[in-house]
Length: 434
Ligand code: SF4
Ligand code: SF4
Image 1: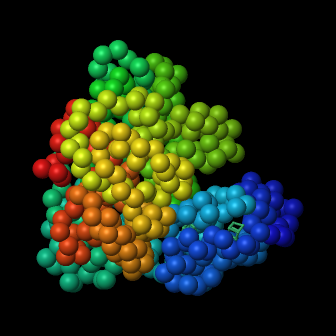
Image 2: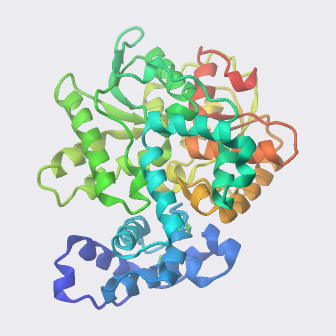
């Protein structure tokens, strides 16, 4: 695609990067067929190709973002399905991230939108605030009919029972069982440890049982993905730097073989830290090291070679491939292979390339589209006839669990892949299966 940025515009490294991305797009439209919003809405402006064109116009003009462009960029899930399909290797993720930051800088959203976004940016990445807000939502549930539609939906989404915070999430070191084969840092995250602390507990048991020393590093926290995808660049970079400092300290100190991430949405962002901080001379080298160390938990488990005990009892598991894992990190077969080797009968979910509608804060900001995608995913999962669902991202687990609980069908437990692998290799049977 031809672009017409001025030399002055191209002096900005962000414009320069987007210019290179835009020039790769040949407008073939292959990506439209696998884009969830195009599949639902059938509008070219809600397809990757249409959005690329809108973003090009917005950036070239140098003017503040207009309402139409904001509407169609906001509807993008950042699921990255288009990147998997694109034959020209167009890096849509970096382009849309730039567009969101540009919109945040130049566009004044309606009042309620601004308040809602500020609230999400402040609350979700902070485990203490998030916990309190979920408690408040539980208390407010009987009065939700008084709230505006979007807040009503959010209150309804709050879990009925909130698990206690886990002691494993505090900074500490978990020694390897037997001789140490690896030393890794575990990213314990933000929202995940509030919604389901069992995931980090299962990850630590699984890793230590297979010879890994696991460090929960002092100073590490939210990866910044939530705010990054809302265009809050400064906030996202502050969070990224805190993590880089914490993990780089461990790397320089006792050494690290990997930074293990068990929420694939976060993993995609941490693996991109090198790009996010490429123009910052103080941070770029350390960011690149940390990005190189970042691994999805399944990548580390492959290296460790799990030892199944036979506990899996041939449970049939439908594997939901989180977009951030399959499209963002190109990890598709590995989790299924690990589950199968551990003794589970694994089933693929039809239309696996389509997002479940969770997508970070998408289900809170675009509830209508998110619900349509969720219901479609749940129908596809039910068609597999599986006994349980496994996925590697907390957002998907909550979204799919909510859909399965609401569609009137028989209950199907939804678990993180590591909970099943932990059980199959000597850990406790997951509570959801009891
Ligand atoms: S498939 Fe790639 S090259 Fe073709 S229109 Fe989509 S982004 Fe552009
Ligand atoms: S990221 Fe997903 S929703 Fe956005 S344009 Fe690409 S395929 Fe469509």
